[in-house]
Length: 126
Image (tube, rainbow, N blue to C red; front, side, top):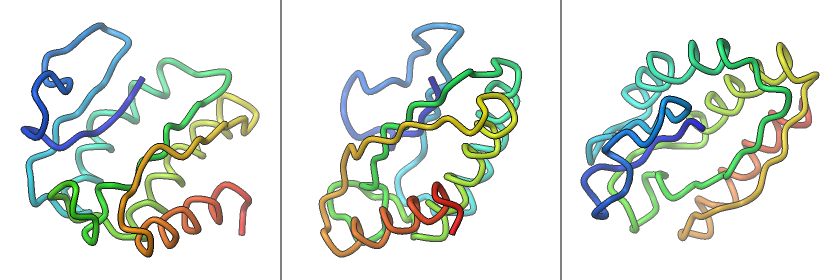
């Protein structure tokens, strides 16, 4: 399991490692896309490649968008495209492209719609 989350935001939100099979990366408030991309590249990618998943399940949350008032992160559609491309590359390499993606969150409807569209475009190869 790999994830990012704004920290601190909620108590007990994952800053303490829960197991060797989890890469739960805390992201400071006001982080932007470049910072998040660096954290993902440094923390997720080697572990995902080493694990070689046979299928990938994505809990697709888009509340880290800069227009979403719930959190204080600054991702934009291009960042969600990049994240999806990185995850899709792992699925293509190890899982015959098998990905299941379920919408988790995003509370600014405009930002949510644009982010989901960006995510889906990568998944369908558009």
